[in-house]
Length: 171
Image (cartoon, rainbow, N blue to C red; front, top):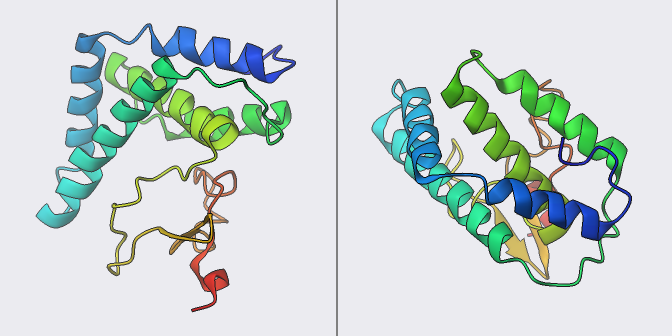
């Protein structure tokens, strides 16, 4: 596991980088295929956003992890939260096959990095949510249009995301 037995930021970064470096081009093709399959029944507008843009976001985050060089000062890292995050992601796995395993492994890796290391939202900033709203950034804080709407969804990762609810933005 990524955050089991991790006592500091350097150990977490080392684990993340090691796991990111294990993804092969073939793995990325399988993950992309899995994401596109899961969006087949969506309207074409959302199929593009949730298929192509989400895959691009995950792929670019893996690349960012591989290149990460900053000294890890991770005041937000909490092993208990990390383990709970991983449990929620495991609940997402639809079937126990290679594509789903690769996809959930990628989501675990990128989510842990975005939340505990990079301090970035889980979704790409340009991704449009139903209703036409996107994640916004104001005064170095991120605001999400669905943050509070997802808080009771068992598999939602919103609880861990650094975004605040859009209603808190004050516009």
